[in-house]
Length: 423
Image (tube, rainbow, N blue to C red):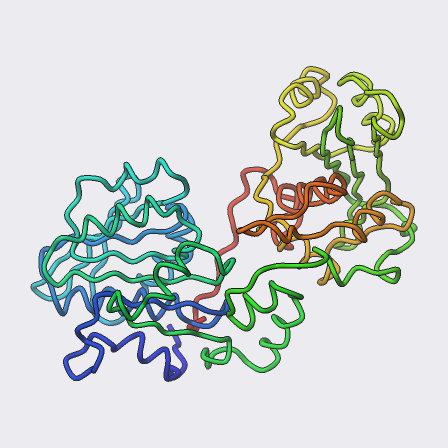
């Protein structure tokens, strides 16, 4: 594995606990800031090195949003580096356990996912000598605090790593703003703290985001979102339906009876997904509600005689999903419904040109101009109006697309990332 020289902040993350460090007596370390700033790799490596320096035969915990994301983001890139340094690593996937040996020492590391409030029960009753939270701000407070309560061994330490969220977030208020009184070392990262990122790559990331997401993921600020959700969309952002054949088709649906129903027809051509047509029915505007059967007939009209690979539907529309299944013409997939993360993915897909909205999709264009962030919420949330085409577009990106890797095969393995450099 090829590692480029570390930056000053990366070195501090690696060595803050060493005997000659002025920070060696801290009870916790917090690394936050921009994406791709190198904080995750340095923190996870430092966590293991610290654990072997301080303990032998002890138990520790790696915690992520899910165990799968934890393995992908932390464990998989960490193991080759540890083995190159002379450690021996044995992972028990089904049990979520990583055993690590170095010479005559051996420690055990338990892998946990903290995806919701019920996750706190997974870690109850354990005794730990330290815990590392990858993306701490994405985990429920109950899970984080339960894990901290498990660290009852003398000399145990808390390790936090995250990207910024809303400035009213509990982790920002309770840990980052109070890091001094909690005896925590706070290290803030920007992209320029990662020597492995070239200037060209930094500019690429700067161009991916706008507004609050730029401030969070590029500048590393805990800032509130405000104004238009997609401020870069204007009259020049839309295109004509391209001529020629499409290699694949799909449909995304935000279902409504009292609220509007919005369906989008998507066609893929030369690696780009185009929203080539849509169905939008507002019962308040039309003065009459439509039934599941009537909406389904409109779905068939929208699809025409095309071979539709899949229809993704708002997961709360259980009766409509069941109707599509019974009709047996289309493969139906309940949509992933993470709103803020989905908005970020849609924003990136639009700015990169991986999806394009055709100018005949009038209701989508209207909603792009009206879709706003709520100014009264203490967390990130768009205003729940003028959002139906916005929701079905989000369902398409998060469920049919997978970060510019084409149409998902619904069980397709993820591509292996290149971990040849610190990132």
